[in-house]
Image (cartoon, rainbow, N blue to C red; front, side, top):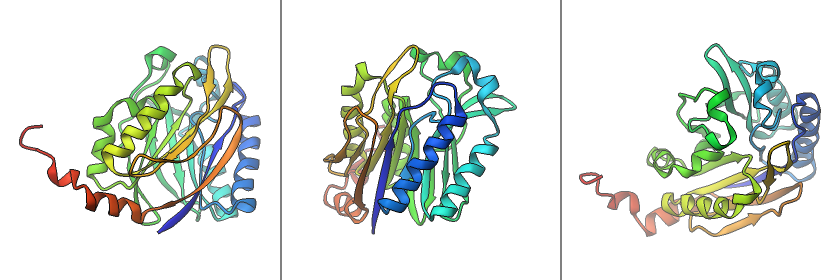
Length: 261
């Protein structure tokens, strides 16, 4: 099974959802209509950026308006949207939430970031999610993670053990640590024998500069597509049969010593 995936490595206008919604609409339309993408992936907090101190004003109540926006877009363009993550206001507090909608406009997954990044003050403004990372997308076992999550291999491995073949990662990964981004993503792909589809943003906000370098890594750990540090879309085809091939050739899941760890 082959899928054409588009990663939207966009800049984000700080604290201005209206502008960002309009820009996402154009990006997704281009990816689906002009590039023929089956799946479009957006970066973390594409709606607001890291304007955390104003989340109480900016965040979408239960992400309802954002879900409607992504659903309408997906249905109109007949494309799956891994909708990065957005600012969500819930009864328990503010969350950093990933939304996934299928080509029929149905919400198939919602995941709020589990690991809050203290270096960017997430723990002061957000509450952690309680969701599982796994979901099924058009028959493909998948999982979704947000930025800092990739530094916790045990969290990623849980989804691999549950059968995930594609790990979607969305991020606002800062430029000073961009080399770690690539190494961590390759490691997660190799050790879990899966595709890693990782979309980062570019640009700046008042406190940070973001590094881009969105990439797709195959189950051998080979980078099959990679962006630079400028705003752009990258498009590549992934072959999900390769996951089964790699897992059959090196049976790491069978060889795990569950009696010891």
